[in-house]
Length: 204
Image (cartoon, rainbow, N blue to C red):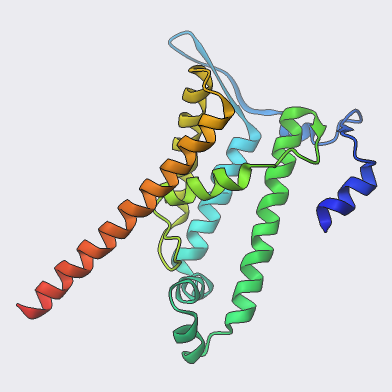
């Protein structure tokens, strides 16, 4: 629905950022630092990415709200019976996701210099792949922000490698899908093995 509204507002055309919108994201937080003759340039949206990951990690690890999210993700019925407002927790997480998408859209528009309706198409697959690679369980209740952070970086390396190898877009989607499947299988096997070890420990 909102994608249709956006298409109507812009007349199904791209929107050029000619008036300096999002220029503040193009500034380099560190520029010109030399290491063995190389210039180190870190765009500010990379710094924002690290800060956001650190904030989410702190919320999930040290706050009651973070515990609620893990509980709801792991077992909504048990969370409800323990007094957690499951509906409010889910709604707040979806709202937080919307804020993250907003920040990501600003960063993407600052890089491209143009706002495209189709600019984020397909990135949901990358997001799923990044969190799964980072150890987040698709069934919920397991994972952390730093795992997703390094999963996103690893996925970026994989994407760059495929681009350098000039693989067609179709193959890139297939490889990303295989990465997701293998990560889910590995996570399931790890969970199964850990449960088996715990059972043996209890019996002994």
